[in-house]
Amino acid sequence: MKTIGILALVALCSACFKGSAGDSLTVSKSVQLPAIPVSSVPNVGEVTLPPVSTTVDMSSGINDLSKIGTLNLSVGQNTLSDGDLSWVRHVSVSVAPTDGSLPAMTMADVDAPSGTTNTLDVSTTMGSSDLLSYFGEGQVSLTFTFTGDTNVPTNGPTLTWALQLNADISINKSVSDIGK
Image (cartoon, rainbow, N blue to C red; front, side, top):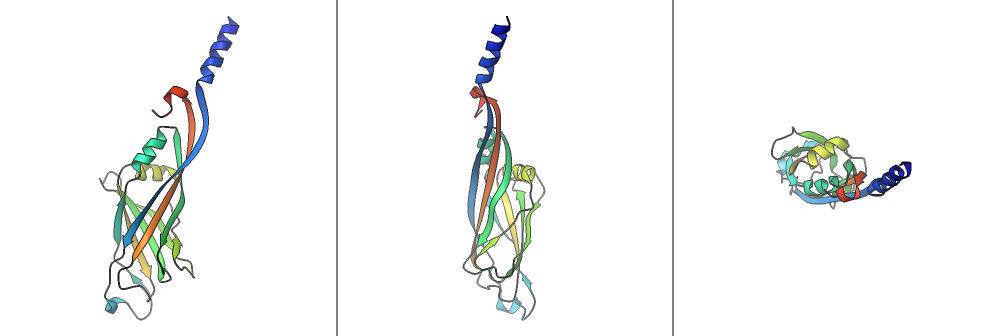
């Protein structure tokens, strides 16, 4: 009887998979800054540009990965780039589902390091559970607010925003349940 029980346990465990995997989800969007009148740029000090927004939807990729196992998301890359970002002093980014199911949340709020040229790392303040809640929800709106020095471009340049979410996946399922 013990032999049958041990064989049944071995057969049951051989049909289980426990482990981990990793993947990443990436999105890149153009962010068009507004043109501003030259007369509104002070001779000294800083100027805050009107906020600009864009939308993204990473939920299908997140939902597909969550079918494999339990997700832990982290930000691998969150950058803004352009030919010249030397004018940027501060950037804040908020995120909110477009359906209004969650309140707006600050995703990033950073001072640009001195000497920033064409790429700015926009470190995120969101943890894994917030990243899952917001980006797994569906389409989200990202609102960017820039503060710059007196060299702020008045012609409304286009920046490129890039986000990479890294997914660590913990898997503890029977082989037949993976992907369901």
